[in-house]
Image (cartoon, rainbow, N blue to C red; front, side, top):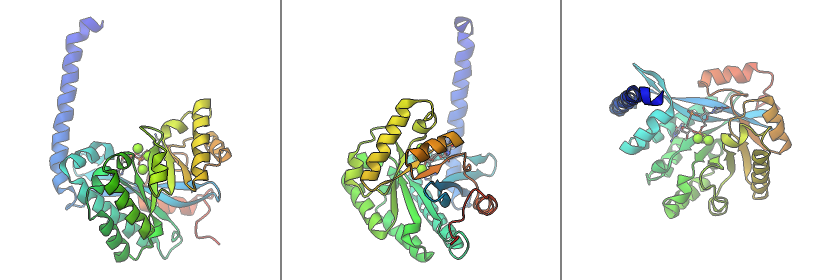
Length: 286
Ligand code: C2E
Ligand code: MG
Ligand code: MG
Ligand code: MG
């Protein structure tokens, strides 16, 4: 059957690839004007603290509201922006947007919320990044401890000296640093020793089967204990069921994030969710 259809499947795949390439090129072109036309939006995904059962932080995940194509997820344009260098300006926008949101919450019931932003290696190439973050915090009068920065592994294995210096400056400001997607890739323990890390986010791939797969549970337990002994808090990514949440509670995991609590949503939706859902104790309640 494969032989029979060989020719057609081949054509199907090349057409698919061409379509994708065309879409890629068009998106890349449209990215040039996306910032000035204000087409990016940050969605926020709440993180539940298992010690207090409070939501007092949220991860900011960027989406591109494309005028013709609708909402585009980050995996479709972040890599393009990294190649073209536009990621620098996009990252600066993310920093400003997160600080603006924190400022908007400052005097209300969400005054104790933190926001975690994602930064890729290419963004740390920008020598001005730390200054930019400091300017944004000052401009919006936001306390640095309200901001978290999530970093993926490339930051710890490329340009190590420079990145360590950048991250130290950021940490000295009071910004919290998190290692994202821990457990995939090299996951070297040296990151925990050589960089000022506050949080470790265990990758979703370890959480998905944690209640059935003993190996995933053993790894998560060991990483959690190790992190705790080093004074690092543990966040579990991709929690989708109550069983996973209970399991992670028993492992002494600190924070859970995932569709069980909420998908990433617009800020106004998050505000409604936190106000209306009795499950969440408001962070500012006495
Ligand atoms: P990430 O930082 O590891 O973010 C977690 C991803 O998992 C998000 O995908 C989130 O929507 C998704 N997720 C959360 N909970 C669940 C769950 O329970 N189940 C499943 N299946 N998925 C879940 P998203 O929003 O598509 O973001 C993908 C990646 O794009 C992020 O991975 C991050 O690396 C990158 N990214 C997002 N926003 C930014 C940004 O502002 N700047 C940069 N440089 N990268 C960003
Ligand atoms: Mg992240
Ligand atoms: Mg992650
Ligand atoms: Mg990821």
